[in-house]
Image (cartoon, rainbow, N blue to C red):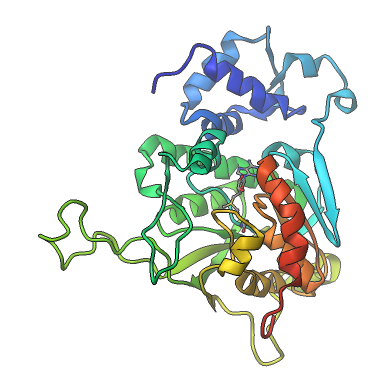
Amino acid sequence: MKRRPGEVRDAIVSVLGARPRGATVADIKGEVSALIGDVPASSVRSYLQLNTPGLFARMDRAQYVLKEFLDRPLNDRPQAQIKSLVIGNAKLFNADCIGWLEQQPPNSFHAVVTDPPYGLVEYTADEQRKLRSGKGGIWRIPPSFDGSKRAPLPRFTVLKPADLDAVESFFYAWARRLIGVIVPGANVVVASNPLLSYLVSGALSKAGLERRGEIVRLVMTMRGGDRPKDAHVEFSDVSVMPRSMWEPWLVFRKPLNGRVQDNLRKWGTGGFRRISEDRPFGDVIESSPTRPSERAIAPHPSLKPQAFLRQLVRGVLPLGRGVVLDPFAGSGSTLAAAEAMGYQSVGVEKDPEYFRVAQKAVPALARLKFNGA
Ligand SMILES: C[S@@+](CC[C@H](N)C(=O)[O-])C[C@H]1O[C@@H](n2cnc3c(N)ncnc32)[C@H](O)[C@@H]1O
């Protein structure tokens, strides 16, 4: 990949600019790769060494920090000015969640329900500009179906091995920070897709979260099922990939502190809330694609439906108390589901346009009525 001179150095400065406490080479590599595409750890390391002690300083445990931060005491290092808003029991921040998580005190959150950017590149400023102008990029518009127009989908099959490495590094760095701010026994439920879930799952386990299974969202998606491109007549009986009819939501947990009952008593975590006395929380949830009426309220290309999210969000707090976190909040659909359940929630969204959308969407989605939810 051809880079402009100084691109990697500038990306490292931008990543460390949001980390007054510094970061390891592995973390910096993950975040720099998320910003500008894959950059090998060796290259990050040589930029750091080349510019140390000018721009960067090396701390203990192979952490690097911006030199300008090191010259000041920790509590005097600049904090990014972060916009936030309160909507009922929900609080939403307009920030990059990686730096934001670093600023949160330990034991702040009791569950995580989130739908991250899977290929990482699809929510970069460049790809969002292409999506908004309807031209090129990773987003494709699936053909209309049953007369209805479909929302754009990112093409994860175009990711190259280096992009896949960047996905893994990013989720490792993300999970390391997350573990620092959630309570023992907290459930971490992460939306995924069958092409990339193995990478994310591996990174989360490596970071120290315990894998507890997967929730299957049974939904007819627009992925797969197509005949071979430019040869669909010749091979009319062939689907290149299975038509995807489900979506995996990875289920992880921060290791318990003691027994389940100890965690339940101390933190209100360590299990799932039962649906009723005779129905446990299950790992298959029937769902439909997001309804056009919800899309009209919350125009986001990855909007998840309230009917599904409310079941999930309800289940992740076993005693119905605590704070649910969504670090990739998009239009705020998780926060809206938490509002509808009467739970407290916190969201983080880095794109100012989606942050603005969420301001109106959270209360409007939370007001929607469903049978049984
Ligand atoms: C798949 S979408 C979530 C959509 C959401 N579930 C909804 O229903 O609206 C992922 C979101 O994460 C945001 N995002 C990507 N990287 C982020 C980061 N590092 N910090 C915070 N938000 C981020 C993107 O702008 C995007 O809106």
